[in-house]
Length: 68
Image (tube, rainbow, N blue to C red; front, side, top):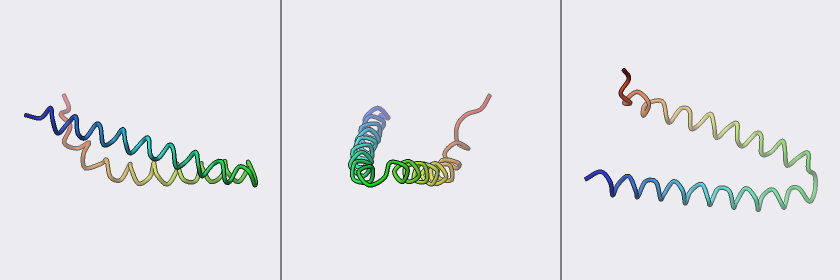
């Protein structure tokens, strides 16, 4: 019953991660041609913002996990 939605969710997450990785690589190549330091700062800032947004979004989901 829950196998198909779980597999679809896993597939969608994998696809999203792949697209994010590809776009970050393309962005990195275009920025790195100008300045490697700017690329590192940009990637760090993006990952920091993404982690903050994911932390806020995951908090309600983690509350539903069974804790023993």
